[in-house]
Image (cartoon, rainbow, N blue to C red; front, side):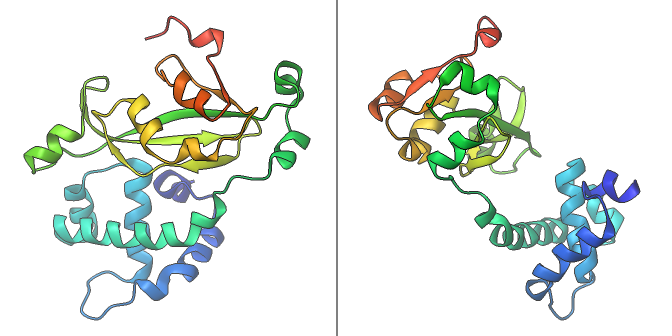
Length: 215
């Protein structure tokens, strides 16, 4: 349970499997942390979002070193896992569509989009601080557009955007829309005012009734 609390992983077997795939990129001379500690530091940051200053004290390194290690491990994890996120063939999506969605949309392939917003430490750079300020969250954040299937699989994750950027702008300026084909249905809450952009690809935007009128 302690491992799951700090890392989100269910067992040491999973932790060691991930470590085996990335440790070649973590080996370096004259560093205070070994490969195990570097991965643990990164996963703790992802899981708990503790400040780098806190991680520095825990691992007996400077705040800047903790930040550098985190970015290095993140790049290795991205390289390892990026191929697991892809857009399946439409027929594969149709054949496994939950009955509740099929009853509503028939043979149309429905995808669900939302922006995932993550709180970050306040940047020291004033421009970055302004770009990441989210008036909705009242804190500095980064945002990602995430697309999932009704089955729960992740289809697409955008690059990171500053928290001040609207959901509409992110959707229209990442390459998500290029994945749509005629007949697709996009489900989104009322904050996504992208009817014309989705319609340009001969797809349809639908807003579930339970999200209407919500802030």
